[in-house]
Length: 328
Ligand SMILES: Cc1ncc(COP(=O)(O)O)c(C=O)c1O
Image (cartoon, rainbow, N blue to C red; front, side, top):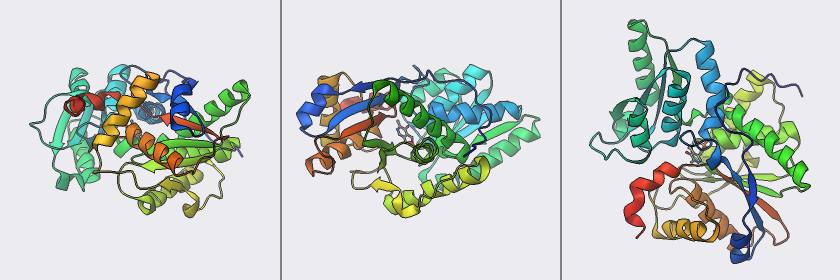
């Protein structure tokens, strides 16, 4: 298949390492667990969003945009990564964040402020129209003669997803060098672009591993729809060929817990366990819920002992700090 990859602006430190979680694998008495360290794509620009931003920022620069507009929750990793990427390439960032303006300037929001992002706070209800709100902001900038580039929630467009198609190619190369093949890849799912990109990459680069998403909000049918829409658009725009049906998109549902961004004590305890067993720091919003799901699925016997599982660490460390009160 010939895929027409558009321009890409280098932002991430790649390839990220793959490491074996020796002690955690023993402790859970299940498959061999490895970890793909996309928490190491950068220092400030850490996490999965940076891979998507390489394509989105390239398009913004190509369009000669002077401001990047995007949105998310108050502690959005994507918004923070966008603000840092904007600073890096010398344009302004304007973030539309859901929640109250009175919140502590902590975690991701602290970094947003540090790098000079302009922030507009909106309510949960207003957020339902966030695409319109961002478009109105872009129109206001246009009236002042400033060109804006709008990045939808999570950077989860077909263009952004290309970052994860290439991440699968990267993992495939690493597997060859390690002379091993993973049976399963597990990732958290929040807006669907990462999983869509991984599934596109799997078919493009012939990876055998089954790819599973663990949703941290909404439910499986919602994400099957959303992920398949992103994939359809990527097929149309960039020439991917995949016969994957919506029903074949494997979303392991049941680990949203108290809700998006809300932590159960068991999830906090798991963050501590992984930190103390492996020196790996999970974030409370995405990777802790995904690891919680993985551990539970191991206990339920879904992954056989002789199998190899690659847990994709998608970053999010700054989201830990506003939750410090839940830990000790
Ligand atoms: C740390 C982290 N992990 C995983 C995800 C999920 O990625 P996606 O939004 O592409 O589904 C996100 C963003 O939503 C994230 O910030």
